[in-house]
Image 1 (cartoon, rainbow over the protein chains, first blue to last red):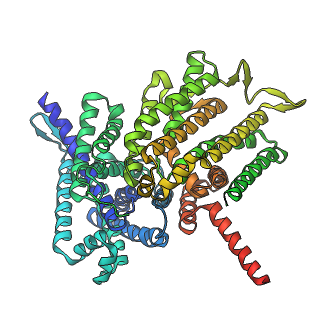
Image 2 (cartoon, each protein chain N blue to C red):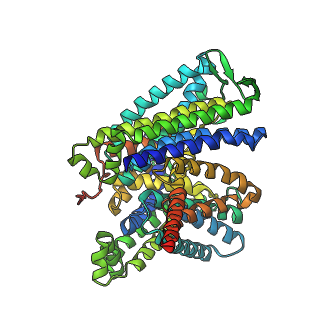
Image 3 (tube, each protein chain N blue to C red):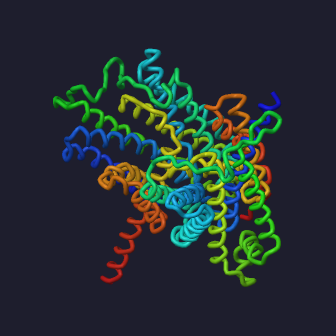
Length: 291
Length: 335
């Protein structure tokens, strides 16, 4: 009974950590540019797929990972420069469609290069599972949690202790004021997309041995990340982490105790409930709109 | 000014009618009729969605859910319970209206991305239910839908009909029916836009705060237009199901929701004829791109992105703007 619960909890926290990383990516871009990037999931896909195909070509794992992350970073910058920056005066919904177009484009490219099959990535440190109180913990889960925690810590350091991080924060608070004190906001926007892509690709790589990977894996993962970000409150880093973990755990519990067919429905009902009672999510800023 | 406005609208409707009724002179292939019928029905749903997006300035990323409920309700009632198509369509639409009203009230308090998130969630939940209630909906494999009937008279693509003494095929009959439905949908939408409700909606789009200051009950009007656009989707979904003869949960999928809103934005938010052009373009594009096979997805994404980057106002408004500028230029040259 308890071991069952623990099992679902492990599964939930692992997938929740992935959602949290995706949600952080959303948050970063949202803060810097008020764009919801529907191509966020594609960064995960690129991370996982590029690593798998590079290792299959004989590139050592670590180098393959670095190359995959760099590829995603370049893609993030290209997305901002080529698709978002030229459309700076577009409506919210137009920007959404642009990022959807970009995600279809990236997915199409991935399908051309890597085909439509599912690809399997080996666990980083063997297939031996760990037993805790009768529940089984996949060793890869520890990698996901470990890497996730490190990334969050690095982000916190980046935003509170470095000048570049503070520049991004300043831009998200007030773009014009940031420009007045000499921050090059265009560079900051580019940087936000890049960091967000790096985060996404790393998440995609560490989770790939658990979920497998294919050209279209980004759609549902990206959406879940968006749900997590909205639960936590768009724009809040803390909210993204809490939202991601909460979503993962609720989903795993729903799949375990209710019905696996309806686990996604539970996730989407959860976001509705949260928004009904807290229209700005759990940690969303109380913004007073000036008219 | 106002008279000019409605004159322009009337022109749009007449233009659309001419296109709809002239088209059969140029096509005769059953596949083309089928495609045209499908486009007309989807365009009808898009005209409804445009009321919400283009006029009231709200976003819905879950509209396929309502389309799907319409299609499945009518399909299930006619095939399992022996209902006739018209009552099934009407009861389905009323049901969708109730659902949209109940969900719409709390959702429409949300703004921007929270609203897109909430509508997306509603659409997803509907799609998941349709996928999983296998006994009722056939699950992911879909279900057959009987042909459309009105008082015992059946409209089927395989039938033969006579219209004003002319023998016409079932394909053509369905196309003409769908065309008339689309014209009615446009006519209704335009009347709504020119009514006090329409003016209230546009004021909500302009500035919600200003609208409420001058006494517009913004919450009421937003919910109202949400319900109307959901009913449009439901009715078109029901007809679509009867026309296709077979439906799968893809009619309620997230992809389809995205396609619908993309049609609105690509064609030109707020322009009824524009969004119909959006529907035509996005339905025909995959047909044209099918020749490129593996490149299809890449090209589709690229075209979508480039169009929206360079014509953020949409195809028709950009074209109209371009023509107006040229006209102004040549007029200036004459003077």
